[in-house]
Image 1 (cartoon, one colour):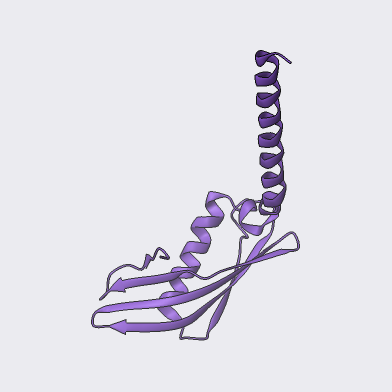
Image 2 (tube, helix red, strand yellow; image 1 turned 90 degrees about the vertical axis):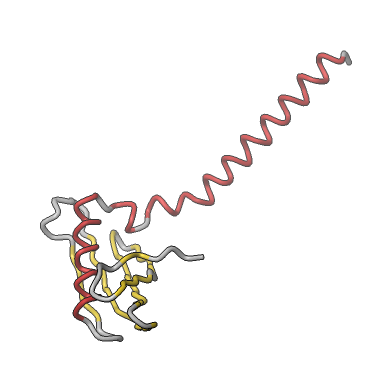
Length: 129
């Protein structure tokens, strides 16, 4: 077997393995395309953000509020239960953990963001470390 033919076979085998790996990865992550968040449009995001901020300002720990995307002109009905889970304070800094359970097309997903603010400032989403 010539050196050129052997190199071609190795490159072909490597390409097939890479293609199979990428296909497997895509298949394993395919479930993400059918989650409630995948159906959300920008108007839905803006609406639920407002509902979360209202809950942060008005609800006590353990209290919940419901959100539905009515009026956002999305053909997919999406709803959520927003629960303020806990509050912690450190001087002027207040942090609140929130549970958001999104539902759409028979699928459900839970998000657990944390928001903090300084004094009477605006709530800021905290990045998880």
